[in-house]
Amino acid sequence: MNLYNKYILMLIMLSVMLASCKKSSLNLNPPDKLSTQNFWKSESDADLALTGCYNFLYAQGGSYSTSQYQVVAWDNFSDNSYGQYNYGGGTSALSSGLSAGVFDTYNLYQSSYYVNNYRAIASINYFLANVDKVLTGDKLKQYKAEGYFLRAFNYYWLAVLYGNVIITTADPYTLDYTKHMAKSTRADVLKLVEADLDLAIAGLPDVAYGSGHAVKGTAQGYKVRALLFEKKYTEAAALANQIITGAKFSLNTSYPGNFYKPAQNNSPEIMFSVKYQLPNLSHQDNGISVSLLRWKGELGTQDLVNEYEAADGKDTTSSAVYVKGKPYDNRDPRMRMTLFFPGDTKAQGWPFTGSYAVGTPGKDSWIVGYYPVKKWLDPTLVDPDYGTKGDNDFVLLRYADVLLMYAEAQNEATGPDASAYNAINLVRARVNMPALPAGLSQAQFREKVRHERRVEFAMEGIRYFDLRRWGIATQKLNGFVQNPLFPSVKTKYADNYDFWPIPQPEIDRNAPELVQNPGY
Image 1 (tube, rainbow, N blue to C red):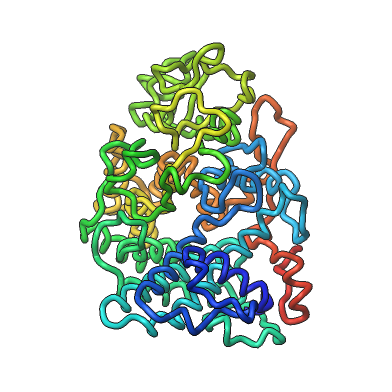
Image 2: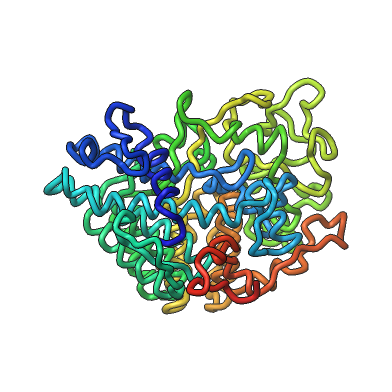
């Protein structure tokens, strides 16, 4: 863990991992070390330390109003949305490309994700190295399992974003910070992810998710993601099927109910999320309703809208129910559950009153040619504005994803059998979309799965990672026209962007052992 010297590490441990400790519980003399006399003495210390490990889920995403796991901002890296204020960094990534340098305040995203995940890993390694000092038995097994899950979670992010990164699992206080370490391959990082997830699966409770703490299904779901990323389709399908047959999760009968409170609180579909709770824990700076609606920081693209089928399951050119001239009617219901459209009023959930009571492109930050986001918004809100706080949980894993990952993996492993059809049709039936036609080839079914993933998870931060693991990101994103009204403005994506650059300061301070990813 040579990425930080011990003084930075000390600040991490003091300010984040043990943030909830009372001042009197820490002996800060000398000031560059945690007090071993007063910590790791009771079970409550383990609780505080584990809470600190989860606290990294609230890490800032490099700039104003965005956390790393504010998933809607991740769609700005894809063909799903445009971020007019560069929330999450997707706008700059698609306009200027990725670079290893350090940017101004509004362009620190790609380096902040690297830093955030390694800070979390340092804290988790410290927790895993010491928790057995105060716990034993089943409680120790569960707490260590949560630690293993969280380490796998953070290394998975590093693997999918940066690819080849440094692996360290040691207590950070035992490391020699005068020595440098080389990167490991993405394959080796994912081996660690799988191993940690196996330990987590073995020790986590086999119950429904709800408290914010990972459960067995959470770890299983993330392992399915890792296996799909590695194209281990047979293994991925088998593990996804274990989740399905385990019956601890199910689809929420209300698709929108997964994205706002209080409906989120009892959703049987949510398998992992970043928990918020007013008044003490709200979104960074402002509620998500302000950034999405008052400021319209993310806007759906016409290309995303075009992806939604007509209500009879056919494309708009062959549908019997689609009416030409009424492009927003008689479509897949998820379209209107995800985005707002011109002319929307209170009847469609548009939350503004007075002169803004009718949704109008070109007015109040609504850029013509795009569509404001409806998903994630509390339908009871009225006139959200600066100062409106929000506590929607950011959902990172849903049961619908498990079903669609199963359909994809099973199709790739054996072809589109009945179980693959059943999984995808369950997701479609939840919103009253018709079942897929029988007799599809493997290639045809693959395209149906990719379509379903796009419309089911629009504005949930999944599309970008799907495109990259399918190997079609360059095809879809290089030269993509985000707004058809401005066809000359196109996005930029190169093959080497599938591995983000290691932040240049990390390369500089760890040279020559730490080398940059290719192409930067």
